[in-house]
Length: 147
Image (cartoon, rainbow, N blue to C red; front, side, top):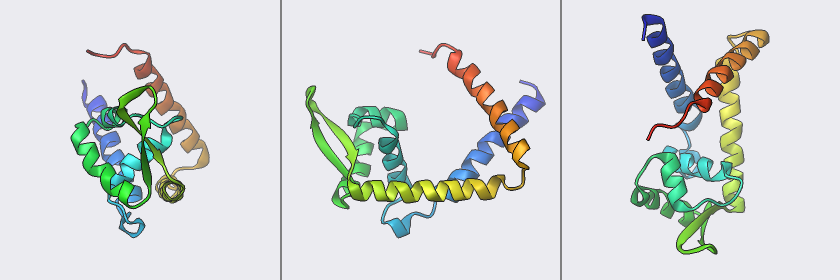
């Protein structure tokens, strides 16, 4: 990796951290922690209620750690666990109506944060940046998975 590649990688990592902290860091007023917000977002992005094991894998955490995050979300009425009809030993997660409300607010905050962060770029520059990042993302998606 040459210096330019290293700088690109470090800049992308730093930008991702700053954007995440900016848009997801202050969620206490919603009654959740940033980690719980992340769980809620992952579950909310799934087209069908995911199994707890799938969510843990997407978050790259142990299933027990996910349980510790899901319990308070369920107690707060934001997530619901239901038995998986295809596997009695598995539980599915889905946002409740209140959870969907929190997800909508998290989305609003993320969009506002991104709009503020990218306001330093002209619209044509933002479109070009998106095009370039999507090209890199697609190239990575086309590579076979390790393992």
